[in-house]
Amino acid sequence: MSPAVSAQETPIVGVIVTHNSQEFLPALLDSIRKQTRPLDQLIVIDDNSTDATREILASNAITPIMSTTGARDTVTRIAQNFLQGARLAPRDSIVILGDHDDTWFPSRVEHQNTIMCDYPAFAMLASDGTTGADQTLRSTFPVPANWNALGKREQMTYVVKHSIATGGASAIRPSLLPKTIPAGWLHDRWWSLAATKSSAMFVDPTRVIEYRISAGQQVGLDQAGQQDSTLNWAKRHVANTGTSLKRSADLVRLLSGRLK
Image (cartoon, rainbow, N blue to C red):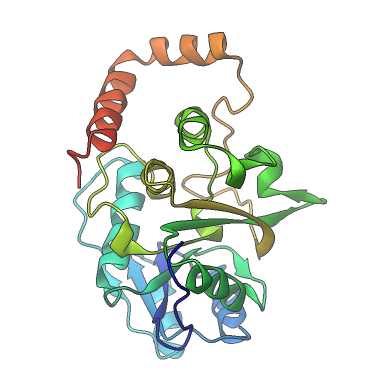
């Protein structure tokens, strides 16, 4: 196992993507200000907001970076925005991902930074969060209790079928992840696959955010067949042959090391 890295030596950067976020942004920024371990840098990628989002950011001394993605479909667009933010983080930094409509628990940054610095081989850390009514993210996206003790083959078999990470509750080390995300993949889904492929995916049971479920969110807690039997999972993919073939090709390239 690689030696621990000093938390003081590793830049820790928050990456947020905004789009018409005026309703939720003040609460998010307030929760970031109240962290027991402050971020070294906050990068905000704004995707063409037409409300007061930019004014709210400016009033908090934050200058957003404009989205450069030309993607039209929502999934690809969101992924490319987060990828843009991660690429702007300093080399070898730890990136704390955040959705614009969530709030962070006060110890989130300190907790995730400690784990990532103690284990510098981790490419991605997937923590948990609350979703209201005593529910959690892990309730929607269950992961085997012994995930971190499973072998690479068992982990990869599971993560190909199941989503195990919610981006808004995750931390990544961009230097250990692919520099691209293929079209049609969400950032958290692709990065969890890439990290698992490298035996560098860690699942953490700690709740670090309050995940907000709102009517206007672009993507959310869609289980997408999480509980499907193998037969039903196969049927669902046959029904979406074009997408499934494209995703299969992407996975083959990832697993073979041909996609960097």
